[in-house]
Image 1 (cartoon, helix red, strand yellow):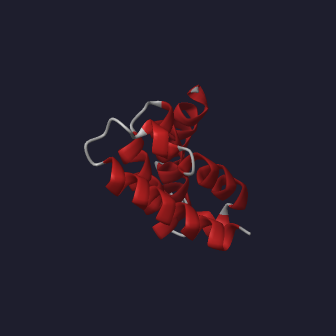
Image 2 (cartoon, one colour):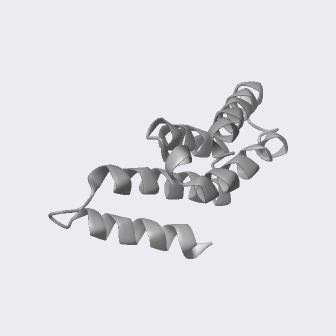
Length: 105
């Protein structure tokens, strides 16, 4: 989907503004990057980026985004089957999903 790509372009333009809310923009960039990575088939990168998004409290501030991210994370297991580190990535995805669901309500 071009949605996340367009969002990233818009966020990067906004970041260049003098009074841009840098932390909010970063949080939204991490979410968009993580979700786009899923669409691109870069599942490990998605888990890493969505973990950073959660570290920036994105899952607390954006509850609808948190629900979607949690849903995606819960479906990555079969998609990671060909990754040599699949058990590690699946475990990280499940842990992140639980973390997100613990605050997404």
